[in-house]
Length: 179
Image 1 (cartoon, helix red, strand yellow):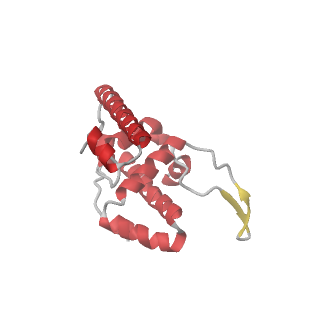
Image 2 (tube, rainbow, N blue to C red):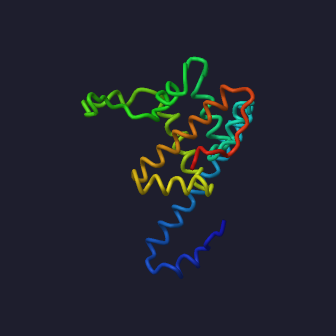
Image 3 (cartoon, rainbow, N blue to C red):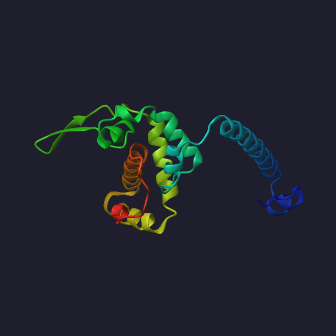
C-alpha cells in the first residue's frame, strides 16, 4: 500500500481542511485495519478449520472467513430435508404466493438466517473473479438485472455448498453449473 506524505497531500489538494480531513481518515483506516487483524488473529486461534470448511473453501468465492461463517451459522445440517429447505433457510428463494400464475401476495421474507444470506452474497461477488461465472453473470444481468443475477449466483453457490457439506465424497469440479 502506498502512503501519501503530508507534503504530497497538500500538493495534490489546495484546500487545507480537505487535507486535514484526509489525514484523519487515513489514520482511522489504519486503526480499523489493525483492529481487524487483531480480531482475525484471535478468531483463527479459537476456530479450527474442519473438513467441511476445507470443502467450502474449494468452492468459487468462499474464503476462510465466509466458510467458517457458513459453518457456524448453519448448525446441524441434518435438520434440512433437502437443498430446497436449506436455500429457503438461507433466504435465497423468493417468498411469494401465487395462484393461477398471478401473484397474490408475498410470504415471510424475514424468515431464515440473514447472516447466511449475507455470506452467500459475499461469495457471489467474489466468485465474479472467475471468467466462467462472470460470463454467466453478464448473461443473467442482461435478462434479469444485476441484483437478481447476483442472487442467482449466490443460490447456485449455496446449492453446491450444501452438497459439499452433506456428501462425504464430494469434490468440487467445474461442471455445467455456470453455463
